[in-house]
Image 1 (cartoon, rainbow, N blue to C red):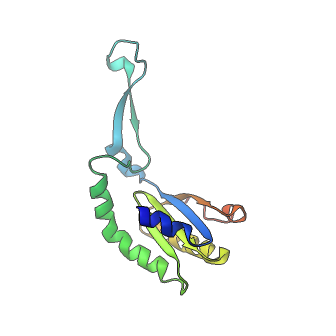
Image 2: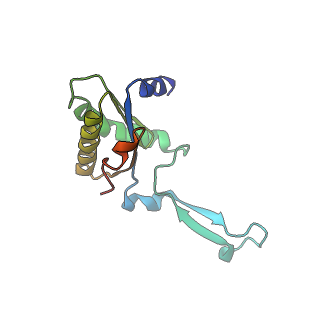
Image 3: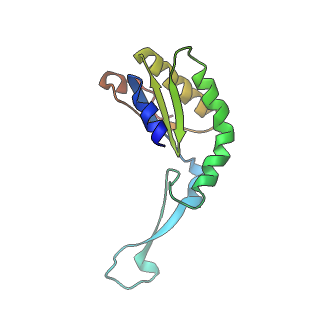
Length: 142
């Protein structure tokens, strides 16, 4: 992770995006929470929540990352070869990180990545960039 963070800072323009947890998979990430810690512990004092993103730190998180890596490796390769310039593309847990030397290249890669993930049935959302002028141009949620 240390090396990834260092390489992330080298190029001038950066964008990140969250890989959205598919709606059908959210039931597998439910957990119970107490409504009122001062009240009695019974079924009326418990609420069920579910995560909308893959949760880092769960016992299954390394497996999920490893299982999706086989799929995303080809995706990353397609994104990286779409340019001849040096750039960096990473997936860390549930985040896609893109770094380039030009605004145009970052926009191109972001749109390309969004399209590829959408074709795989995955949604890249919440694109952010270190460049304010690019933020409104980055892809939106599908």
